[in-house]
Length: 413
Length: 90
Image (cartoon, rainbow over all chains, first blue to last red; front, side, top):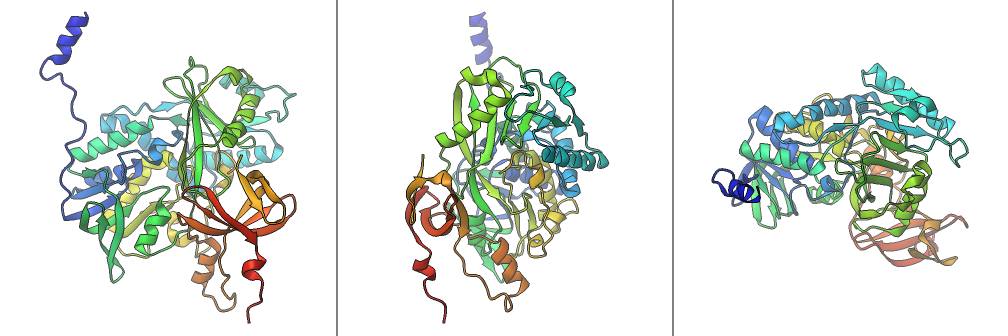
């Protein structure tokens, strides 16, 4: 058998396929430059090619493909938001996610687990009823569940009435899912490259060239590129890039830390979130518990991990699942979250003509990868943001029509 | 534990403090355009590197100014707000 396996591996035509074509030379001109080869940027490149026939596209990244916040989130997908605009937007994302493995011919390990947001206070119950009603009104499956149903949905959960913060009920969002984040980025990258999009890693954008208020190109660490249109999709560094283009954003960059434990046998089917205790957890396909909590308390561009955060996570996590006390943490990391004042993203036009923005993804970016890519591609192709993302424009702050989603953030930040 | 030197209380755990955001000049409310006012309310420089911010020591309700590096997470300097706002504008 082992010899047969080696023979099988060596036979011509059985060699692993190269996922991406070898990196091409950077050309002096492209129709569209996308800054940031994360999930969002690559998805936009893919839909530009698929839906709009625009393939003269360069996706530029200062690091490597999917190596920024795409690799640093906790991969939760859900649509149980609070504002009708938000619910509709994220619901479209879920519908795209469901068909994505087939569409890209790349398994993104999309796994619908159900999403439980626990309430420990009457105020939390009230907000959840509100969310459930908004969701149901828009055709999204969300409902309040009591303790009996909760015990059935998540047997390991500590429902002891004598706990310091006893659980009173939960918002159950059946479509809640997790997916493999790297696979989402790579799936889009491969599918986009197959349609002619060029992906240039290790190519840092160092300047934005404009003429009479219109973007004409970008300066990179590998030379100057002229381009008709530019899309910035660089979560975490959005303000720095916008400053190069000459405008300011209502964003503060704050680290969001997360960690995973050693792998355990599958025991936790749903994704469990406690907004009051500021923690959330899900079990990945390989058995690790992926755990997250609040963002850091002040703005920072450093991706360091802190002991304080881990301690702050462990105590409430043990209140929910006391038997985890003996489980070891395997890895801890931080991503850079673009926090907006209303906890909603910023998508659409900017003060610079033909320069489009996809930013403000705080702690909710991964779940929007397909829909944001699709709708931003439409924006870049037509020059006009389509109705599902129109309310998320940069101009909403000056017009005082914010989209308050703080009440639907997974944990209080 | 990260330590912040409070000008009033000396070295304290940073968890005792709240960051109040960048020190910026408030535009003249009557003269500013809506755009300028919105930018003052919502906009941030959000720089990577040395920044100057308002910080608040919660237990003693004391506001002061801290300079820190948002790239390296180093506190560069802290001082009373009177150092900057000691004199009324003419």
